[in-house]
Length: 400
Image 1 (tube, rainbow, N blue to C red):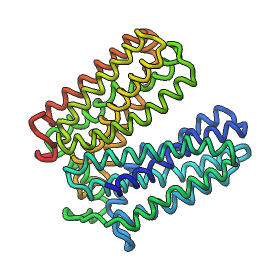
Image 2: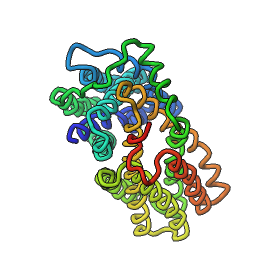
Image 3: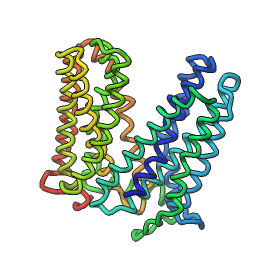
Image 4: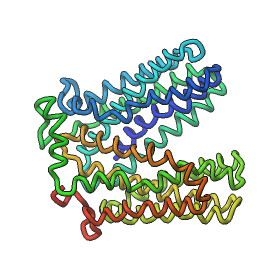
């Protein structure tokens, strides 16, 4: 469990170093906003990581084993990439910045692939829930350190020094990799690249209900995702100041999410993954509906605090169950490839479902918009009837 937490921290640190922190640095250096916007493209490795995941499944390095060997290489190259990004000059060499940032996202995504596979292979099915919640909490702490801590430090030192310090923050992950045990491989490993690339798909789609599970991954958090995409404009529109939003949403939101992830992990030990998906999904939908109530109440810091606390807590619980479920349905022979495919699919609603939310909010009004987001959660919940019935504690107990 400690390994899951520390590896989550190591995975969370790099993410915002190529987004919010880099954007702040480029803005300070006077880089054109169009160029800053295009810099988002350096994040493509996070959505395309399934393309090289079979390579990491297929080959075993002579040092430390299949998982820890690749993980050590990813972390060391990530440290040098982050430090290298800090040595660039955004004002004079924006394309060199883009290249350095691309290396950071590539090696960060590679680290994610191996850590996800390691967690699945190292933890038993019963431990996956709590282990996933600790991983997510470590990830969020890493993100907070990089974004909040990085920007605060940038007020007192050059960005080059900030990136050097952030590169050093990967070292706990390196020590974890060196000290942690290599997971067993009782199901064997792929013997060819073809087997590593195509057999995971063939194995997955040979299962009963495989298409329904993919639909569930797409729809389970779609309502929550759509609502989250428009919350900042919503807060501003009903009269909250940016300071109120920052203090309440960031402070209450962060700790509520941490609490929700931990509670979700503990409850999954007792309830099992299937029942947790039902309960946490229902709480997610109710928390989305609370925004419609907030739209009726209007400007009230206490009401905002209550809604944010409930929404982030339920979202943290739902995300923990969601991650544990995806890990539980992967075949341990092709863990890296199958998990990379599922997590890439998980990101689709964040892009496509969020795109029309502004149109819906503008034409429906805030109250009706959040009610719509609540109703959109129903299909994802109904899909649970197909492959995760309440009476069965875990999907891994079935033919899946």
